[in-house]
Image (tube, rainbow, N blue to C red; front, side, top):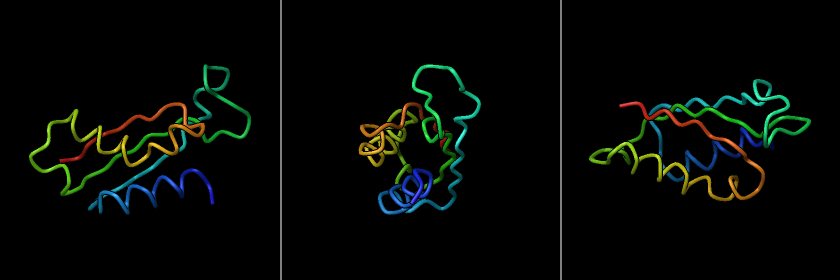
Length: 85
């Protein structure tokens, strides 16, 4: 299972998103901090979820980061989050 697959599975389990797009953009960061051969270090996530209702943008980002804590601790270097309302 790829890191992208794990991110999708973890966000789906934790936040039951109504819209979710996960993109590996590691190729855009070749040679930068955290990049490694094979990619899977830099991701963009666009997500909508009922879990974000009544939450500030910062609180919604924290929910996403909490759901992906294991990935962030295990080599995911950068995560760009776009909360869709």
